[in-house]
Amino acid sequence: MAKRDPIYGIMAEFDSAQALVDAAHKTHEAGYKKIDAYSPFPIDGLAEAIGFHHDEVPLVILIGGIIGGCTGYLMQWWMSAVDYPLNIGGKPPHSWPAFIVITFEMTILFAGISAVLGMLALNGLPMPYHPVFNVPRFSSASKDRFFLIVFSSDKKYDPVAVRNFLGAMNPRSVSEVPS
Image (cartoon, rainbow, N blue to C red; front, side, top):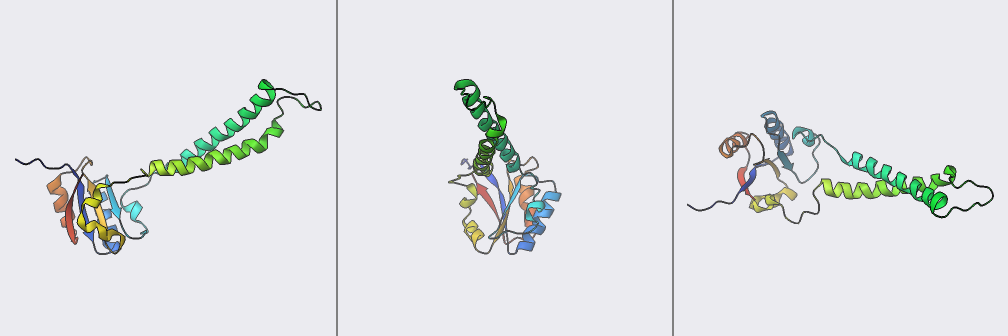
């Protein structure tokens, strides 16, 4: 018996954006949670149709900004009050109004860097290889075709049931996606 490659999922190809959105709604309502859709352009309502609702980038930016603000403030406090205190014109070593500008700038800097790095990390980038490119027809995803995949890691995944379910929605083709 020949050894088979592990399956990444089963993918259906559709001719129109509306057919993809309808199929995504039906698939999500049928209980499949680990699904994804690919299209040559953004489709309004597709993210909601596949059940994509979490957005963690704002939390990453908030944490980065808080760390940046604390870093900027504590750095200035350490330098002027602990490490090298100078009494210039009667100014106290810990003069918080003088620290506000740098604290603000460090907050913005860390938040911006966190936004870029968090977006890349949460999107799984850089990704030099993705299994969906093993399907020959997937090259049309950037031109005029629409694809819906049910991942094999889904709890409800059964290869025969998924193939029959996707086939019942009248796709142009249904393909296995090898890992």
